[in-house]
Length: 116
Length: 111
Image 1 (cartoon, each protein chain N blue to C red):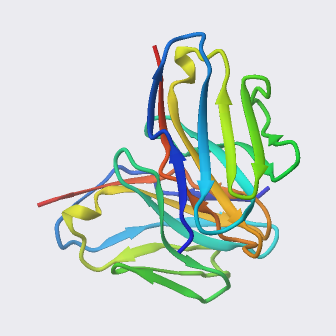
Image 2 (cartoon, chains in turn cyan, yellow):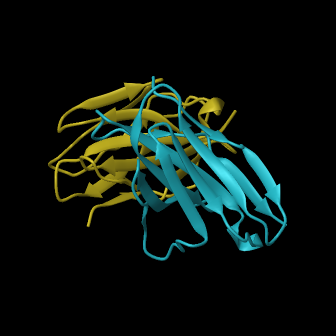
Image 3 (cartoon, rainbow over the protein chains, first blue to last red):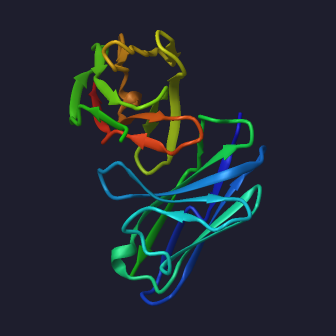
């Protein structure tokens, strides 16, 4: 089946620094990738949708300059949290949809970000 | 817009009890319906899916039937195990669109 990986699985960074999270589709080409944020005991909140080779589309209320998304290839999307603050601490999950998959999305294992 | 509603719980059951987690949806088109499971500290795993009305998705003893007339996709399992303790998300996807998640239902199964 389709596999999506995320790296790192956990990261701790100091306030004011930037951190990059990678999302890779391992055995299929992903034309569209999605980034979600999950708060404790809550559902997933869609942050942005990225299509390969074009700018990401951000959901209302998500700061584009703070959460930089790049989808430079059909197998890789990155989320960079810039000038991180403790309130950015969260569980970030990506998903990917393949070129021939109109419905199904495959989810990565998530990245736990802690900003101290 | 599209939405998904599900019982939030937490739900606590004894091992071997029958499980039902209700899920209803509103959609403008013809979505596919999914149940995802999230174990503590992990990402989402697809549990089962149904792509059209009257389809039944099943996996690991869990079942759900896509009921268009009642706009429902209730999750059931005849006999739960401690290892089924997790958060369950009902979701829908319209073609080439984003996932709409329900709020999640936390399930705890006690021996």
